[in-house]
Length: 139
Image (tube, rainbow, N blue to C red):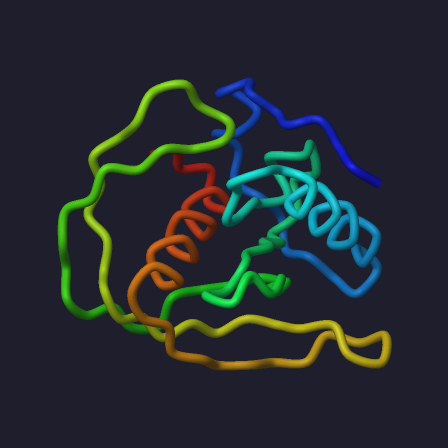
């Protein structure tokens, strides 16, 4: 179900709790909401009112992906960026990394399966933005 975006900074500043396989409907709502928004690249569950550590993003080919409980393991190539956010009016200056290694979980056959993957460029930047959302950190 497509959800309305949360704009309340107090709500968005709360760290998210770990997601489980039982949060599959939240992930589905997140995916449907993301793909309904023109020009959007990523969303975190707290942006649709669920305080679960789940993120959705579109890759370089506009294919959607879901990550449960993402965490950065490694970050290389720091750079300064100016980012916007669907939940905030103003843009923010942040430090991001061009190459990251992330551990996360993916729902497969009704259970969360551990994964590790390296990301670079724009995809790495938006995943960092989403991980910040899960920590309750607003850019």
